[in-house]
Length: 300
Image (cartoon, rainbow, N blue to C red; front, side, top):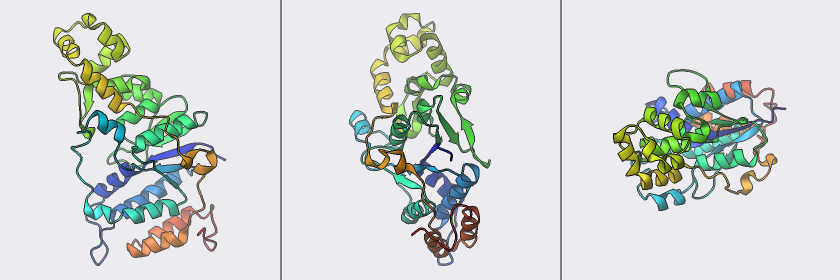
């Protein structure tokens, strides 16, 4: 039995699927694109990994720690489209019906919970399905990321070596790297004039933001030196915003048994497939789950 733990950034993949499959509705005009896209994603996970342990991890409530630090954190994010919101309950039901666990902790973002699960089971192999750059800080010998690439099928591995190849810094330096360049998707401004190449170069020279701030006179480019010297508070705040909490305690993952996947509930999958007029979805699920459950003996 594969004892790898698979952790999915749920909303990231729901949004990605929703926007990738446009204008899909039932005959009476009910939006169905998010449900359809999640069906395909769940089937893809089963085909590529056939997991036994894992969870879809959702954001839940406001990220209190970060909003206390920066009230405008993620203020640039648009509200969830109504056409997506009306599908969320059935998307969640579909995820659970495919046997997956749903994990969420009040006032924490999915990335923090993922980091906490990875830390809680640090002796296990962990595969994280996420495209978020900040998750790269969790990557180590036992933790790998798998990202989706627009226009390509399947998943692309991002392990320790791939993180260095992509960002030119080590996973342990990702927090400081992003603190310097900022993250526009989260409304975190970086240091003006410092882009990815400069940030990577400074981290090669100094190793960390703390060392850089302690030795700013050693920064060779005068313009960059002045920017860094005037940005100490910003860098420290950014670092706290980007740092993932990895010590969240929750009953939903306090033991490995809580992360065991269940037998699929094909009755519920059938209900959803019929409601959203996704004719081939049930056939695909039945075919791929034939070795995990008897189609005549559904797990209710």
